[in-house]
Length: 472
Image 1 (cartoon, one colour):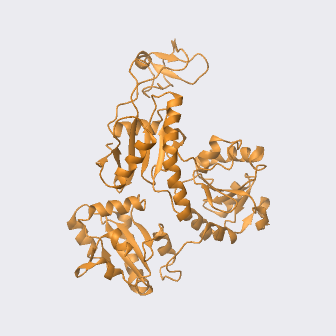
Image 2 (cartoon, helix red, strand yellow):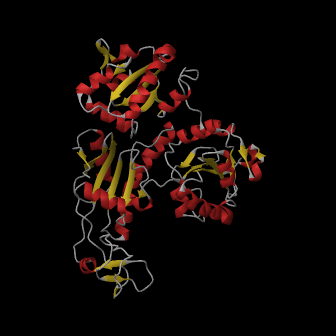
Image 3 (spheres, helix red, strand yellow):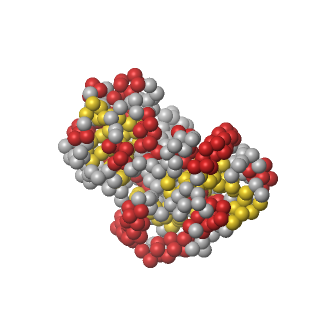
């Protein structure tokens, strides 16, 4: 049975160990319940889930398996003693980490619902169970995006209802936003300008999916927007769309193709980087650049090539070397309607995120590069500026500023150090999300080529690499 291969041969019941295959035989669905007694939301949710399970869901054919995030076996035993279902043995920490990584569990309580063969039904099982505790929609298989939008009530300016012809044949941008959110209020006017100035004519339609706290707030905010909106009254569809795309923060933009397949879940970054639509409809790049944002870094194991010291042509060669394998996983994901198993990124410019990762993984810090223009010392050092090298406030020290109009300053120490250190060789890491942070794996030293990337990913998949934790 596929689930036995996933979970191991034995599970725990109230009476001791049980054979996984036998224990799950005949079940219509299995819920992996990631939880820990130390977590207040877990302690609040567990009694509810236990009541739903005992009263209705067990009879419907649901089995629950507790996957513990407790800090000791003693805590696990005490917490499991309150639960009426099965559990993954506490000593199977490696299996627990594999499950957390496989299903991208970044917080608890979390519920992942699988079918009898171990295929994902929904990763947002907590929301599914909470909205249907009696199991009337068991096993809670989510509707496709096309099915969800087919029943959507859309409105245009003034609140007038519009028919499906308003979005037929259009690329859609679902814009998750709310007026109470300062970044949303900053992004909405930009998106409106880009939409009006050309993106609409290219075939893009935007649908505002509101996170406002009242219908009055929704109406006021939508009044500033030149596109369509999901009717505020359909809160259930709003939650279904947020769940379908894993929207956990706003503003967020998801771009859908004409057939309603997902083009890009990072639509905000894609549109911001190309507001005239030169690369419309912004299909995701197989290999992303960290300067454009974290991308899939918090979702799937991600290979990152640190090539900041290399020249542009060499950086491009590394990106091209990574593309074949990256595209392979993208194509496989489309065929199975799942996320790619791995992400691939390059770091070319020494972004803030890259600096943090370098530090936490114990990699040498990037040498400080000279600014493209010769800096000149300014006599004003009263403060109100920060050094673009070390990040410190410039009050009281020397200030070297770009005379060509760039918003760029070095303190005296950074100005002296810039360009003095030798360049670093490229590094390659694999980062993965684990329950208590992120872990990493280091690729062998040497040139980054298509063969070396493929070998690195194969070694990770085979479990032959040493796992290390990022140190904060």
